[in-house]
Amino acid sequence: MILKIETGEQNPILRQKSAAVSKIDKKFKKFLKAMVETMLAKDGVGLAAPQVGVNERIVVLNLRIDKKKWQTIALVNPIILDASVATICDDEGCLSLPGIVGEVERFATATVKFLDENGATRILELEGLNARAIQHEIDHLDGVLFTDRATKIRKDK
Ligand SMILES: [Zn+2]
Image (cartoon, rainbow, N blue to C red; front, side):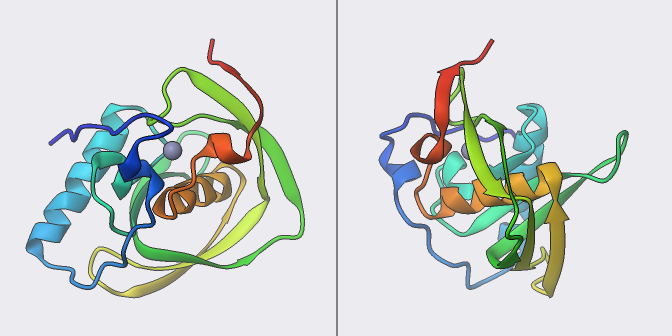
């Protein structure tokens, strides 16, 4: 099922802090599946629950494994445990802010702790595009949009 994407810089759903997930049940797993389907349908590298109108701490990512391989993953209640001192500045966009891009400085690597779709605790070290994506998506859970951090905001060509 493809979910409707919330858009707009002042959209109150995108601007509030989301609550932690307390129960992982069958209905919840169905929602995760719909989030993944929506992300893939919209060609996103990540999607946070507030972007589909749900203010809960849930993120899905399409992780880049190598040049040809991508893998989807759901992260429930994700937190960044550790990040590199090094940062990288690069272009970012967002499904909730269509048509614009901007440069955002992010940690080059990030270690993230989360619950998987079965409720098991997992720790993952991410780098490159994957590290950028998780930082962008966790921002969504705190009501922060990339335009709050970006420089050189411009129209996407
Ligand atoms: Zn976004």
